Length: 148
Image 1 (tube, rainbow, N blue to C red):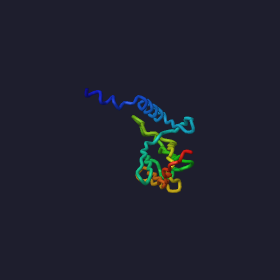
Image 2 (image 1 turned 45 degrees about the vertical axis):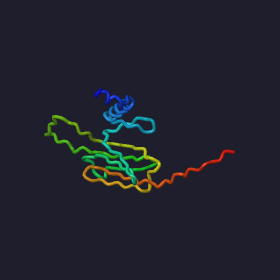
Image 3 (image 1 turned 90 degrees about the horizontal axis):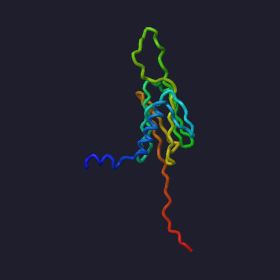
Image 4 (image 1 turned 30 degrees about the vertical axis):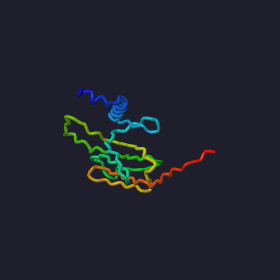
């Protein structure tokens, strides 16, 4: 049956998790140390890796470079800042307002291989690009232990 293929890879728990993330994002809530904190808005981010580094890209339109702060402390990458609203003119009548302004914060737990000493952040055309180098962690060689 052709329609059954879609159900073979369906994971209801993944769907529930995704729904929770969307609801939290809708209300600007992020989870940190078990507590929900509020942000005025939440920027969209991509997190990726290759053999050399981890990369986090955040869309920050209308945010000035000096209003963005990036830290990596105890394995947690934090991107925070503020998108400031231009002063409203009294003669302007809005028919729709969908852009969010105010403070934002995103936090990402980084793997142990993330090297906190080798982090680079670049901000260009409203996109923040953070690259975190991977450390060369040598895995212990397998060793046979004789049982006495």
